[in-house]
Amino acid sequence: MSVRNVFKMELYKNAQDRVNLVIMLVFMVVNVLGGFMIANDSWSFLLATPFFFSVFASMVFLFVYPYQMARIDYKNRVMSLLIASGVSRVQYYFVKVGATLIFSALSFILLVIIPILIVAAAFDMRIALDFFNFVLEIDAATIAIIFFGWLSAFSMLMTSVIISRGRAYTVFVFLGIWIVTSQIASAFQGTGTFFWDLQYTAIIIQQLITIVVMGMIGILILRKQDL
Image 1 (spheres, rainbow, N blue to C red):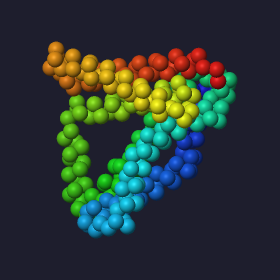
Image 2 (cartoon, helix red, strand yellow):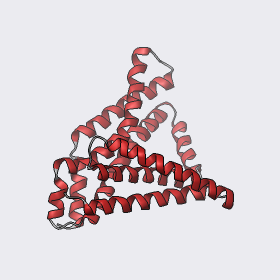
Image 3 (cartoon, rainbow, N blue to C red):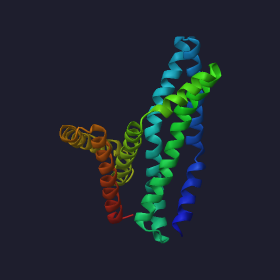
Image 4 (cartoon, one colour):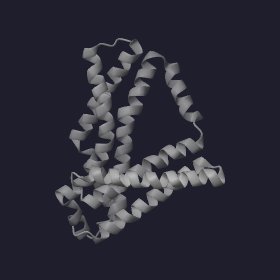
């Protein structure tokens, strides 16, 4: 089986996950309704409670969704079958990361970006345009920090899933890795700021190092695991 076909299979499998897709659509609708309440200043305890729960649940879902996608092949033992079909573990790692990244970005768009744009456009198109202008005016360094920060957190999650084989204690492995990398990052960024006076550069370099190191650790462990 070719890597391209495995990637297509991953995309198809995730697209057919109706449960998670329905959950995303429900959260999106509730977030939109909550946005309308904020814009209309029509709050009530009965209406506000579901909205705040939806926002909190959406944030949790943005973490749980990629975790669920990453662990499902451990749970269903699909990974061992793919490896037996001739796909190398390194190839599978990058296929899984790529497909999970795509659907993680999709979940963020559905739960955050689309509700903001719908509410803004419904009340005043200028608000939506102002939002786009605000995004366009963000400097490249800030965009790079946000983007690579997301990728570094994602790489830590993927490595945590591989270390724990997708078991329930993955979240504790992730928190442990996050605490260690945060301490190292603080020292590294402080050094970069002191010597180079380039704090943004230090942050981006640290994030890139985290991505590479987490990827290497994940691949090395995956290559030695008994699937």
